[in-house]
Image (spheres, rainbow, N blue to C red):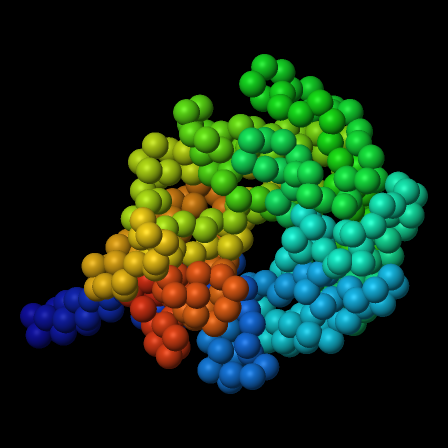
Length: 371
């Protein structure tokens, strides 16, 4: 009897120990299945290691459509080869597909389009044709889960950017109903509403607006007016019954400079304020780079910076998920791959040799702790 009791207790202890042992988390997508995590994915077609990271680690990822970087070569002529390859790769590997971006500043638009004067009707025709062709090609209307429809249309002073050919389509009066400091702009560019409407006619996927420097609610911060302007635009769209489902916060930071957004509660407030409009909130282009020295040179990479980067990633991921974001993407996979962005600033989770950095563990633990 006593022997049997001891045996039972031993099994009970073993089971208890087994229950208390944390499960091994082998990927970022497994760390927290309540949120979608991934990256802007490029290079999968030339480097199988990059492809394997995307397949093994990510539950969602972004492909790119930049009309001015070879995608829209002339009126009515498009090159969808690379674009469609990105979508098919993500789709085939069961990675939720998110596309950035359809319309935005002239920086991203082709010369033949932005260097002309258009009538509103003629430019409207170009906008509709671009969106329709993108959706029709490759059955993209059914393969993409989220479309970043409009990007970076508001400057840091809260005004609409003047370097946008799309402004030639005209303006419409604000219908947000906001007053006081929240009433920033009297009118909004018509192309924004039109782009979202044309997308909704083609797809049931989620439609997103995206911008940078909209993390803070601090009245003394330089970009507070920008956040209020974006909030007003979103409210105007909702009241106008413009189809919109989500707001994307870009998230480009220097290592060590992010904690102020957390400690002040600004990031949490901003996420929850946007969610209060009934929208999903995403962190869409996350990276933590070393930044520059006063003379413009890139700061040297050190062990201390690597550890601070790990802490920053951990802090942002944990805080954002708890505040209510539903998707987070880093702006790339490995350091130095994108030759046009933070080339020597070591901003990402894998180094140039595709070895995991401490930042990877910071993200993974942040996802685990935010469940």
